[in-house]
Length: 373
Length: 216
Image (cartoon, rainbow over the protein chains, first blue to last red):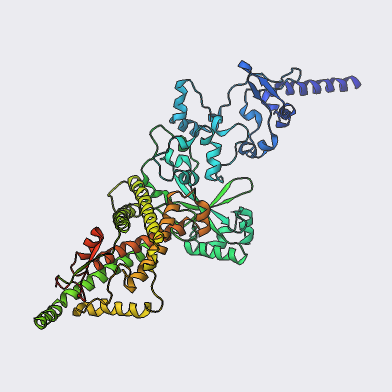
């Protein structure tokens, strides 16, 4: 009986061991923590050719808030050629890893990138991989970023726009309020992002503070403001919101920026393909101002947007965004018309009165001449 | 014409300023219309209109500098300031003249002399235009020329839209003003007399001459 027991135990162990052996390699999910055992060392680097060093340190806090980690993408999901870690070796994985294949997940973006000057530059011996612009491990949500942040994270890493925009009137103003790709990837949809600027603290009001002041939260923001339930904040509803804020002693104004929807075609930046026609934007029928949103950024850096009526751009609640011609205050034109028509009417009326009364003066003159003779 | 005297009322710097300013204003108004109403008019490209508007704006500012230097340098600026004691009755008399006397052939109650060039209404209008409206137009224009450079001042005024509103309202005002101004300039003893004087500097003085008697 005892022998039997030993036999069964042996069979069990054999079965269990074979099961373990049969498990696919991926079954050993390599945890991020394992990678960080080495890569949290800020002195970790490797020598490359010509004395160059490659920094191999990963700031895990940065990575933790990256869009990839937030969405559960692990180190080896991207570095997929690391199949196992062999701790007996000094470097537990192949020391030279394949380039990360971003297109594997970002298929549409990868395809869109083919039609761009950056990809085409590859033919001239330069390779501009995704991470040259997007960075490696700390890719964050861009939606909530301002033009300044978006540009700094991308275009301004390599380009100095001052060198190429001499023709552009108000170039600094354009750089500050219009994202580069709005003109340089003109086929991509764009929108006006409005953010509330607190004039007392002299900074943009964080969404959380704005919501608190309005005594609401992300989920109930629209329910609170959108009185007519059409999912758009009208000018009247925006006025009500500003009043509510004033009651809480928050005084400010809306700043606007022209930014792009983050769609694959934003990669379609091509030489000579930029929009240089000012009238595209600087006219009141411009499609550039059709989409207007208030951006409420969540703590994770994601942008939550609420559609706003286009007319608010022509109001005095958005005093810090003004595209000549494009977002002009229409009723000023009516005042102008009254002034000019008024001026002309005075002239025409007076002239007419002079013509009509000319015989009176002629008679008076004749009399005077007669008298003087 | 034997009683006519020639009076030197418009010194050279004033004439230069006036005509540079006049041509400048017309160009600024035309380009301004193009800039504001790009969807309606198509005289220039917006880019050209803005460049021209900026250049001419600076010429007008420089001309204003000449005006300020001359009038303050010679202290003739007092021509522009009405006498507080006589201003109200004079303005009423002048209004009555433009509103009724002129039609009956009565003489202009204001007699122009080099030291008393403007009637009460002109003084009132020009002091406001030259010392408030025109500087406001130039300052707002300068801010709009380089929004980023002047952003602190712009913020102080309440934002770019406020600055633009001031500039646009004054643009409409000046456009209306030019029509009225040009019309009133035809009310000399001949329709072209004041125009001629603004070129030559000399105004013919007619004792008690009713306006435009030769015309109608």
